[in-house]
Amino acid sequence: MVLTMNDRPEEFPAAIRSLLAQDGVDLDIVVVGNGCAPDHVPDGVRAVELPTNVGIPEGRNVGAANVKGELIFFFDNDAVLPAPDALSRLAAEFSRDPRRAFVQPRIADPVTGLTLRRWVPRLRASHPDRDGIATVMAEGVVMVRRDMFEAVGGWPGHFFLFHEGVDLAWRLWDRGCVGHYAPDVIVHHPATNPARHANFHRLNARNRVWLARRNLPAPLIPLNLATWVLVALWRLRGLAAFRASLAGLAEGLRGGYGTRAPMRWSTVARLARAGRPPVC
Image (cartoon, rainbow, N blue to C red; front, top):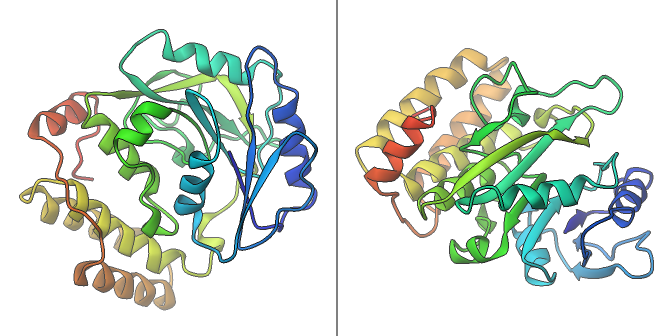
């Protein structure tokens, strides 16, 4: 499932070519135009046009509803699969542990080979070549079991952008599932800065509040948000970023987070044993 806004006329065709070159899997590819009619869609690939930009997570939900298969691969339109067996190797990872609901490959910049810390969905992110259990995910390049994806309601579409991967991962864990990081499978993706988005600081803060209020037991919400605020204040650079983050925090506290379904305390314990308790 590939989402596009027709803003990457060179990268998008390369992404599709790398998908079509995959061996050892039966593929059904759908491209969702988020507020546009998708360009450069080759024969054999279906397209879905959305009249408005509904945001990345909801666009992915539309794609998932329109694509076939037991496993859904969410693929950014500026990523490339450098090896023709990438998808078959990712799919094979699910058979190694029936609890696995999602598998993420190693994402690396095609020029520098750099894997950003935020792309490594487990502890010890400074060693991206080590596999292991994943408690979160990098949303743009990840494979998910369809049955579990549908069971937890898919991506939180109203988030629009940022933190939807943590939300989905937590809900999958609360179903008794786990995630897996498979660094032997490489996917190329440019190492970009998420702060390039105009609304980054506001949406990042708002969705962090929504994430906690939707998913955490009540006693953990203030602890989670206090930890995030301290870390965010330390990282923020500039008055404009501070004001935007403050506006997002206030927006999140006012509501709009959707259905509240706090995870079980046993899930909190499982995440803590995996090294990432949901308080930071």
